[in-house]
Image (cartoon, rainbow, N blue to C red; front, side, top):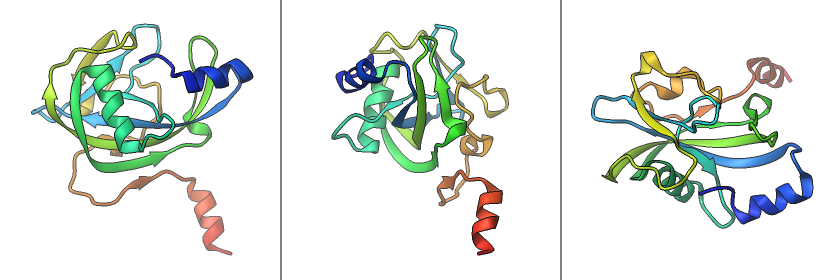
Length: 168
């Protein structure tokens, strides 16, 4: 789905200025453990299946909807892998719209479907091995893609800031 009426309304008011955008992203793996990435075909770098959280929508609902729209797969979020945001997660779209994402990244399990995008935002879908991940539009740390039995959520922060707080 293209931009929702809610975000269109905001864009009409603020133009291309920076917009804070709560979002979700999905790590979807195939039977080989490869990770699914999306290419929009408009010159942007590759991305995870991802998108904005809509009004009234929980992050887990949003990731199910976004993955279905962009891939044709029905998924169930299994684990919250990480939460990201701040200036490192600012992005400018080819049309000049600026956003600063606050992203909830979920590990998702496919329950049905075949790769077939339901919207016009996806030109190509491809699974990649961890060692061959394409250049990404969003700077996720590599650890978020590694399969493990960890039970902790990855939180992004500046180590210097954390050290300064702990010394107070």
